[in-house]
Length: 103
View 1 (cartoon, one colour):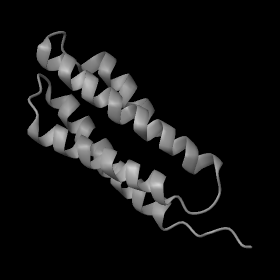
View 2 (cartoon, one colour):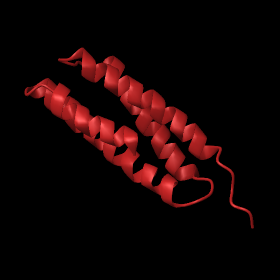
View 3 (tube, rainbow, N blue to C red):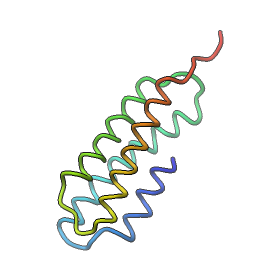
C-alpha cells in the first residue's frame, strides 16, 4: 500500500507535462493500481497469497524494467520507479512465503 502511495505522490511532482511524461504516468498508474489492490488483499486476508504475490512480482518487475529502459524527463522519477519496483519484488516474496493459517 505504501508503494502505491509513493508512486501516486511522486507523479504529481516528477512527471513532465509532455508525451514522455504522459506515457510514464499511464504506465506507473497501471502498476500502482495493481500493487494497491494486491497489497490490500495481502493486508486484509490472512494466509498465503500466491496469485496476489505473482501480480505484485509482475508489477514490481514492470516498474524496474520501465524505470531502467523507458525514456524519462526526470532522473528522480526513474529512481522512484526502480526503488518501488525492487521493494515490490521483495514484498511479493514475503507474501508468497507467508505461512498458511492453522487448520
